[in-house]
Length: 374
Image (cartoon, rainbow, N blue to C red; front, side, top):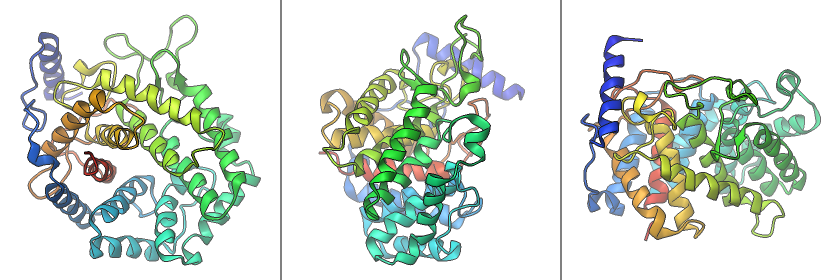
């Protein structure tokens, strides 16, 4: 661990212990500026960050990282109705020939299909979703390496953003109710394995579970490891499931209850600067907020308010602080910084200059819901 990183961790812990605000530019606590919530400003920010990220590509287009980004780009298009944004989405699909990635049973590799299905609703061209439906049919009928290796298909919590929205959207678009039931089965397998009923948070995967004696991986303060980004992925996935499921669908109450439980827990873990730390239960050990998990949390909480699922008086101040903080993570040219790099746990050094495509995707999703707040 670099010495500068250790010093920042120590300073952050001291400041939080004393109840003092963090002092870095992107993380400083400031009063909420009402201008940040004006529709014109939000649309400008969505377009600026989209443009910057499209000009700085990273990873294969069908990678899970870009799946999260293009989910945000589609939300930016829905919000701004800007033609070049839609053109960029169509260009992506044409370049990939509307194919998922290689592993049909790995949620990461079908996540890009969310955007294909969203675009199909606009264009009604079956070629745009045919490969997706082929992959889902194979997933439904043929147990693959993931379940063989791990006992369940979606064995890590991030998968709950990657896979479920694809199954649910495809079920409704293609009139395939079997996919709704299949999604319920796979989702609840993950829920039973990884959801902590006391903390109301998901562990990343089974390697982070504690045994009956309280033995397992711990943070520096002795707390179990629940990382921000993984739980943010879950929250974002819940939004996209609930957006799709009919109001009278039998298992809808399960997803709504989970959404409300996690929302209540997350606002208790939000830090004074408006962001969540990379590790939710050990904020003092991580310098600066983490923009991708915070972006997904902001998105989900704003959506919950807009849908009447979350009490506005309770949750709106948290969303306002989060949106203000996320905008402090955006550089003048449109780069979303303070994004934790790729990895299976929170232990990664990052800063205002750290960016990833999924961080931009989370920011775009957040803005697309914040703009609807009344």
